[in-house]
Length: 160
Image 1 (cartoon, rainbow, N blue to C red):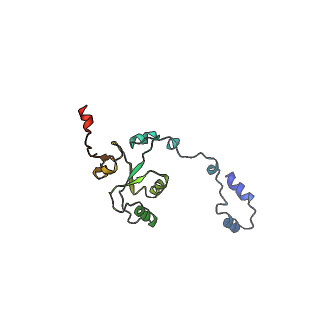
Image 2: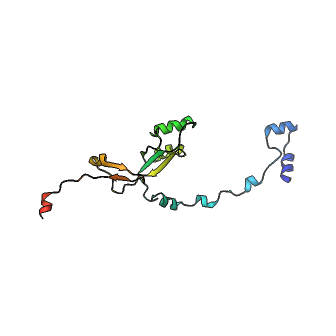
Image 3: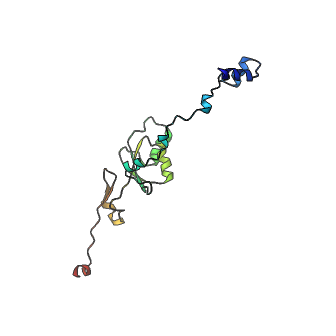
């Protein structure tokens, strides 16, 4: 209550109407908002290394490619989200698109993160060579499966 009287007595206004125009909350000064602690729990800012394990990632060696799939419709969404979905090549729902894991692409994905599912692209058999690209595919776990073409063996290696 003392805060109320302090703010009212310190104001030197000619009329009560003039005080309301200059300061909309002239009658109430909250000390709690100035000196209270943040109500966000400290666990929210803790390191999330467990999440890296859950999604199959390593914080020291991040994955190089994202598999981005649109899972929600853009009907009724703002125009900037529709343009970003079109720019990222996600016009068709449930059709995966591969993007690089760069800060520029990640900032674009941040605009539509509620419409898409982002998975890391895992390469258990390594990256495919140019001649193996036709026989490679992405399975449902987000792994790039490469069927390598067999190369003929050298006759010298067989004889020895």
